[in-house]
Amino acid sequence: MLDTSSRLLKLLTLLESRRDWPGLELARQLEVSTRTIRHDMARLRALGYPVEAAPGVAGGYRLGAGGALPPLLLDDDEAVAVAIGLRTAAGRGVAGMQDSALRALVKLEQVLPGRLRQRVAALQAYTVAAASSSDEGVEAELLARIAAACRDSEVLWVDYTKHGGEASSRALEPHRLVHWGRRWYLVAWDRGRSGWRTFRVDRLQLGRGNGPRFAPRPLPAEDLVAYVRGGIRSAFGRVEAVIKVQAPAAEVIRRVPPDMVVEPLDEGSCLLHAYGSSPEMLAFHLGLLGADFEVGEPPELVASLRRLAARYAAAAG
Image 1 (spheres, one colour):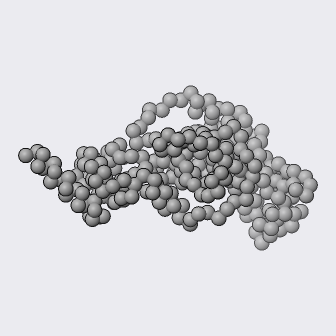
Image 2 (spheres, helix red, strand yellow):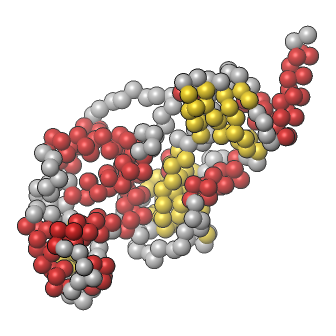
Image 3 (cartoon, rainbow, N blue to C red):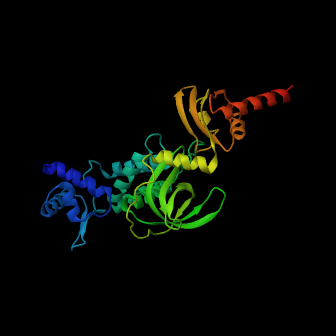
């Protein structure tokens, strides 16, 4: 059995992981009695954590927003700075930090006092950042709302615009956000089509409120990144290749679609995960990189490059 301090930390982690917890379920998770849970909640309130309780058989606990920031060893100015930093990292795609920043943002904004939320919103609304050609991030507020719906298992009412411009309204059971390339994707169960679908978040518009709760389903794949990649390939192209480009990653990123992943190798070269609707189309786009590159496979892409090279050489005399 955990000692009191360890149990309180575990209890806080559980309260942050979803919106509502029945007392019996918390007691089962921590292997203690419901009486101990009541005493632990009183300890958390004494420490400044805004724990809310609902009485009755169907009652439970939730971590709400309080009048004072819980003791995170942060003053008001520091808390605002952290929230702004997390919004920037989650919304604009700081390499390697998107998922962690989004999880931390959901937890922090859940317990920020109202006065601090207003300061964060004001700074966000009245600050203009210079756009980068390699930065096509999604708004942090949109990501946070979707992440909260995933956490709380709440249906999302959305308007979605497909690649070809076709618009539709859908009821989605959101399960996971996936970051691939410079895009965010939502893996969700589409109630109207009774199946798993992948949605580009930048093409989603959320309704004002969320729908009812749903029972989470087993995910369609263990590796959701591979699952999303497979959906991208089937939708946009059937030819895929990994290409070594003799140019800095930052330069290549500016020349390729946002869904293509660029991995730096050193200061002057990188790997490009490229795809195309046909070997000829992919070969043509590679010629627009403005840099030398090496392709070993697939064979049909190599053959297309050779044909294009001969055709261009003949055209140039």
